[in-house]
Image (cartoon, rainbow, N blue to C red; front, side, top):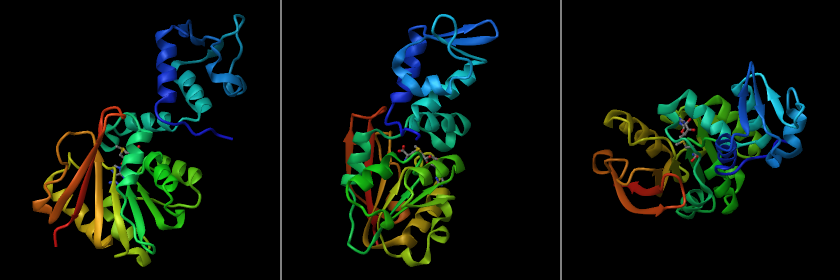
Length: 258
Ligand SMILES: C[S@@+](CC[C@H](N)C(=O)[O-])C[C@H]1O[C@@H](n2cnc3c(N)ncnc32)[C@H](O)[C@@H]1O
Protein backbone atom coordinates (compact mmCIF):
# COMPACT_ATOMS: atom_id res chain seq x y z
CA UNK A 1 0.00 0.00 0.00
CA UNK A 2 1.18 3.50 -0.76
CA UNK A 3 2.33 5.35 2.33
CA UNK A 4 1.00 8.85 2.69
CA UNK A 5 3.75 11.29 3.50
CA UNK A 6 3.30 14.08 5.97
CA UNK A 7 4.84 17.51 5.95
CA UNK A 8 8.30 17.82 4.59
CA UNK A 9 9.56 14.30 5.17
CA UNK A 10 10.07 13.35 1.52
CA UNK A 11 11.81 16.51 0.46
CA UNK A 12 13.96 16.80 3.56
CA UNK A 13 15.15 13.20 3.20
CA UNK A 14 16.06 13.80 -0.43
CA UNK A 15 17.86 17.06 0.26
CA UNK A 16 19.75 15.60 3.21
CA UNK A 17 20.87 12.70 1.03
CA UNK A 18 22.01 15.10 -1.67
CA UNK A 19 23.99 17.15 0.86
CA UNK A 20 25.60 14.08 2.35
CA UNK A 21 26.64 12.91 -1.08
CA UNK A 22 24.52 9.78 -0.90
CA UNK A 23 23.11 10.54 -4.36
CA UNK A 24 26.09 10.52 -6.67
CA UNK A 25 25.87 11.02 -10.44
CA UNK A 26 28.08 8.42 -12.20
CA UNK A 27 28.90 7.97 -15.86
CA UNK A 28 25.51 7.52 -17.60
CA UNK A 29 23.87 6.68 -14.30
CA UNK A 30 23.14 7.89 -10.81
CA UNK A 31 24.24 5.96 -7.77
CA UNK A 32 22.35 6.23 -4.54
CA UNK A 33 24.06 5.22 -1.31
CA UNK A 34 22.76 2.29 0.68
CA UNK A 35 21.44 4.57 3.40
CA UNK A 36 18.66 2.69 5.13
CA UNK A 37 16.18 5.56 5.34
CA UNK A 38 14.19 4.21 2.41
CA UNK A 39 13.98 0.71 3.87
CA UNK A 40 12.47 -2.12 1.90
CA UNK A 41 10.13 0.00 -0.20
CA UNK A 42 13.04 1.41 -2.14
CA UNK A 43 14.78 -1.95 -2.45
CA UNK A 44 11.63 -3.44 -3.96
CA UNK A 45 11.06 -0.59 -6.38
CA UNK A 46 14.67 0.09 -7.31
CA UNK A 47 15.27 -0.34 -11.01
CA UNK A 48 18.86 -1.62 -11.06
CA UNK A 49 19.65 -2.55 -7.50
CA UNK A 50 21.81 -3.12 -5.66
CA UNK A 51 25.14 -2.17 -7.16
CA UNK A 52 28.39 -3.87 -6.08
CA UNK A 53 28.87 -1.54 -3.13
CA UNK A 54 25.39 -1.96 -1.75
CA UNK A 55 24.12 1.26 -3.32
CA UNK A 56 21.33 1.73 -5.85
CA UNK A 57 21.77 2.56 -9.53
CA UNK A 58 19.37 4.66 -11.58
CA UNK A 59 19.50 5.76 -15.19
CA UNK A 60 19.05 9.44 -14.40
CA UNK A 61 18.60 11.88 -11.53
CA UNK A 62 14.97 12.18 -12.58
CA UNK A 63 14.45 8.44 -12.25
CA UNK A 64 16.23 8.38 -8.88
CA UNK A 65 14.01 11.14 -7.56
CA UNK A 66 10.84 9.61 -8.99
CA UNK A 67 11.55 6.23 -7.43
CA UNK A 68 12.56 7.63 -4.05
CA UNK A 69 9.61 10.01 -4.02
CA UNK A 70 7.33 7.11 -4.83
CA UNK A 71 8.94 4.93 -2.17
CA UNK A 72 8.33 7.65 0.37
CA UNK A 73 4.69 7.82 -0.78
CA UNK A 74 5.02 11.49 -0.24
CA UNK A 75 2.22 14.01 -0.57
CA UNK A 76 5.00 16.59 -0.28
CA UNK A 77 6.68 15.11 -3.32
CA UNK A 78 3.51 15.27 -5.43
CA UNK A 79 2.92 18.83 -4.26
CA UNK A 80 6.49 19.78 -5.18
CA UNK A 81 6.19 18.19 -8.64
CA UNK A 82 2.92 20.00 -9.35
CA UNK A 83 4.49 23.23 -8.08
CA UNK A 84 7.29 22.77 -10.64
CA UNK A 85 4.68 22.15 -13.36
CA UNK A 86 2.45 25.13 -12.38
CA UNK A 87 4.35 27.47 -10.05
CA UNK A 88 1.90 30.36 -10.33
CA UNK A 89 -1.13 28.18 -9.71
CA UNK A 90 0.29 26.20 -6.80
CA UNK A 91 2.47 29.02 -5.42
CA UNK A 92 3.78 27.18 -2.35
CA UNK A 93 6.67 24.73 -2.55
CA UNK A 94 5.34 22.65 0.36
CA UNK A 95 1.86 21.61 1.47
CA UNK A 96 0.46 23.24 4.61
CA UNK A 97 2.08 21.83 7.76
CA UNK A 98 0.07 19.89 10.31
CA UNK A 99 0.11 22.93 12.61
CA UNK A 100 -1.22 25.27 9.95
CA UNK A 101 -3.84 22.71 8.90
CA UNK A 102 -4.99 22.31 12.52
CA UNK A 103 -5.12 26.08 12.96
CA UNK A 104 -7.38 26.37 9.90
CA UNK A 105 -9.60 23.52 11.10
CA UNK A 106 -9.94 25.22 14.48
CA UNK A 107 -11.58 28.27 12.82
CA UNK A 108 -14.34 26.20 11.23
CA UNK A 109 -17.85 27.31 11.92
CA UNK A 110 -20.37 24.54 11.31
CA UNK A 111 -24.01 23.94 11.96
CA UNK A 112 -25.20 20.31 12.19
CA UNK A 113 -26.79 20.01 8.76
CA UNK A 114 -24.43 22.32 6.87
CA UNK A 115 -21.41 21.72 4.67
CA UNK A 116 -17.75 22.71 4.49
CA UNK A 117 -16.16 23.47 1.12
CA UNK A 118 -12.39 23.57 0.63
CA UNK A 119 -11.04 25.29 -2.48
CA UNK A 120 -7.54 24.31 -3.69
CA UNK A 121 -7.20 21.20 -1.55
CA UNK A 122 -3.84 20.21 -3.06
CA UNK A 123 -2.70 16.93 -1.54
CA UNK A 124 -5.16 17.12 1.33
CA UNK A 125 -3.21 18.50 4.31
CA UNK A 126 -6.14 20.66 5.40
CA UNK A 127 -8.74 18.05 4.38
CA UNK A 128 -7.08 15.59 6.77
CA UNK A 129 -7.17 18.13 9.63
CA UNK A 130 -10.86 18.81 8.98
CA UNK A 131 -11.68 15.12 9.18
CA UNK A 132 -9.57 14.78 12.33
CA UNK A 133 -11.54 17.62 13.83
CA UNK A 134 -14.70 15.57 13.36
CA UNK A 135 -16.21 17.05 10.20
CA UNK A 136 -18.18 14.14 8.68
CA UNK A 137 -16.69 13.18 5.30
CA UNK A 138 -20.15 13.32 3.71
CA UNK A 139 -20.42 17.01 4.64
CA UNK A 140 -17.09 17.96 3.17
CA UNK A 141 -16.60 18.95 -0.48
CA UNK A 142 -13.12 19.68 -1.83
CA UNK A 143 -12.25 21.35 -5.12
CA UNK A 144 -8.89 21.01 -6.85
CA UNK A 145 -8.00 22.15 -10.36
CA UNK A 146 -4.96 19.92 -10.81
CA UNK A 147 -6.18 16.51 -12.08
CA UNK A 148 -3.24 14.61 -10.58
CA UNK A 149 -3.82 16.13 -7.16
CA UNK A 150 -7.57 15.53 -7.50
CA UNK A 151 -6.89 11.83 -8.19
CA UNK A 152 -4.61 11.72 -5.15
CA UNK A 153 -7.35 13.28 -3.02
CA UNK A 154 -9.90 10.73 -4.26
CA UNK A 155 -7.56 7.88 -3.41
CA UNK A 156 -6.70 9.35 -0.01
CA UNK A 157 -10.22 10.30 1.05
CA UNK A 158 -12.65 7.98 -0.74
CA UNK A 159 -15.60 9.20 1.32
CA UNK A 160 -15.07 12.89 0.62
CA UNK A 161 -16.63 14.41 -2.51
CA UNK A 162 -13.69 15.60 -4.62
CA UNK A 163 -14.44 17.93 -7.52
CA UNK A 164 -11.69 18.18 -10.12
CA UNK A 165 -12.46 21.68 -11.30
CA UNK A 166 -12.03 25.40 -11.11
CA UNK A 167 -12.87 27.26 -7.90
CA UNK A 168 -14.02 30.16 -10.05
CA UNK A 169 -16.94 27.98 -11.21
CA UNK A 170 -17.56 26.34 -7.86
CA UNK A 171 -21.22 27.33 -7.53
CA UNK A 172 -21.99 25.37 -10.73
CA UNK A 173 -19.69 22.47 -9.90
CA UNK A 174 -21.05 21.51 -6.48
CA UNK A 175 -24.31 19.54 -6.11
CA UNK A 176 -27.31 21.91 -6.13
CA UNK A 177 -28.36 20.53 -2.73
CA UNK A 178 -25.48 22.24 -0.94
CA UNK A 179 -25.83 25.69 -2.56
CA UNK A 180 -26.68 28.14 0.23
CA UNK A 181 -25.94 25.51 2.91
CA UNK A 182 -22.20 25.96 3.39
CA UNK A 183 -21.20 27.29 6.78
CA UNK A 184 -17.45 27.61 6.04
CA UNK A 185 -15.56 27.95 2.78
CA UNK A 186 -11.79 27.44 3.10
CA UNK A 187 -9.73 29.00 0.37
CA UNK A 188 -6.21 27.65 -0.18
CA UNK A 189 -5.84 29.06 -3.67
CA UNK A 190 -3.44 31.98 -4.00
CA UNK A 191 -6.00 34.80 -4.09
CA UNK A 192 -3.72 37.66 -3.04
CA UNK A 193 -1.98 37.60 -6.41
CA UNK A 194 -5.24 37.83 -8.39
CA UNK A 195 -6.51 41.11 -9.78
CA UNK A 196 -9.66 42.64 -8.29
CA UNK A 197 -11.81 41.40 -11.18
CA UNK A 198 -10.83 37.75 -10.59
CA UNK A 199 -11.27 38.19 -6.85
CA UNK A 200 -14.78 39.53 -7.50
CA UNK A 201 -15.59 36.49 -9.62
CA UNK A 202 -14.34 34.08 -6.99
CA UNK A 203 -16.21 35.79 -4.16
CA UNK A 204 -19.41 35.96 -6.25
CA UNK A 205 -19.23 32.15 -6.55
CA UNK A 206 -18.36 31.63 -2.90
CA UNK A 207 -21.19 33.94 -1.84
CA UNK A 208 -23.74 31.71 -3.62
CA UNK A 209 -22.64 28.75 -1.52
CA UNK A 210 -22.66 30.44 1.86
CA UNK A 211 -25.45 30.21 4.40
CA UNK A 212 -26.39 33.11 6.68
CA UNK A 213 -23.52 33.93 9.06
CA UNK A 214 -21.09 31.66 7.16
CA UNK A 215 -17.33 32.16 7.21
CA UNK A 216 -14.71 32.36 4.51
CA UNK A 217 -11.24 31.33 5.71
CA UNK A 218 -8.37 32.32 3.47
CA UNK A 219 -4.91 31.08 4.31
CA UNK A 220 -1.59 32.10 2.88
CA UNK A 221 1.92 33.21 3.64
CA UNK A 222 1.83 37.00 3.36
CA UNK A 223 1.62 39.05 6.56
CA UNK A 224 -1.17 41.25 5.21
CA UNK A 225 -4.82 40.47 4.40
CA UNK A 226 -5.07 38.74 1.02
CA UNK A 227 -8.41 40.29 -0.02
CA UNK A 228 -9.62 43.92 -0.08
CA UNK A 229 -12.63 43.08 2.10
CA UNK A 230 -14.54 46.31 1.65
CA UNK A 231 -14.39 46.24 -2.16
CA UNK A 232 -15.59 42.63 -2.23
CA UNK A 233 -18.53 43.08 0.14
CA UNK A 234 -16.75 41.21 2.93
CA UNK A 235 -15.94 41.96 6.55
CA UNK A 236 -12.70 40.76 8.10
CA UNK A 237 -13.49 39.42 11.55
CA UNK A 238 -10.20 37.90 12.66
CA UNK A 239 -6.89 36.31 11.85
CA UNK A 240 -4.48 33.73 13.24
CA UNK A 241 -0.82 32.92 12.72
CA UNK A 242 1.41 29.91 13.15
CA UNK A 243 5.18 29.97 12.91
CA UNK A 244 5.19 26.19 12.61
CA UNK A 245 4.92 26.23 8.86
CA UNK A 246 7.44 27.12 6.19
CA UNK A 247 6.96 29.99 5.56
CA UNK A 248 4.85 31.06 8.59
CA UNK A 249 1.15 30.66 7.78
CA UNK A 250 -1.69 33.15 8.23
CA UNK A 251 -5.40 32.44 8.38
CA UNK A 252 -7.74 35.31 7.60
CA UNK A 253 -11.38 35.10 8.64
CA UNK A 254 -14.06 36.86 6.58
CA UNK A 255 -17.84 37.06 6.68
CA UNK A 256 -20.28 38.55 4.22
CA UNK A 257 -20.77 42.26 4.96
CA UNK A 258 -24.40 42.15 3.81
C1 LIG B 1 -0.98 26.89 -1.99
S1 LIG B 1 -1.56 25.33 -2.68
C2 LIG B 1 -2.47 24.76 -1.26
C3 LIG B 1 -2.67 23.27 -1.29
C4 LIG B 1 -3.25 22.67 0.00
N1 LIG B 1 -4.48 23.29 0.40
C5 LIG B 1 -2.24 22.76 1.12
O1 LIG B 1 -2.39 23.64 1.96
O2 LIG B 1 -1.30 21.99 1.14
C6 LIG B 1 -2.83 25.95 -3.77
C7 LIG B 1 -3.68 24.87 -4.39
O3 LIG B 1 -4.76 25.49 -5.09
C8 LIG B 1 -4.95 24.85 -6.32
N2 LIG B 1 -5.62 25.81 -7.22
C9 LIG B 1 -5.08 26.93 -7.77
N3 LIG B 1 -5.99 27.58 -8.52
C10 LIG B 1 -7.15 26.86 -8.42
C11 LIG B 1 -8.46 27.03 -8.96
N4 LIG B 1 -8.76 28.05 -9.76
N5 LIG B 1 -9.39 26.11 -8.65
C12 LIG B 1 -9.11 25.05 -7.83
N6 LIG B 1 -7.89 24.83 -7.31
C13 LIG B 1 -6.91 25.73 -7.58
C14 LIG B 1 -3.54 24.47 -6.75
O4 LIG B 1 -3.54 23.44 -7.73
C15 LIG B 1 -2.94 24.03 -5.42
O5 LIG B 1 -3.20 22.68 -5.17
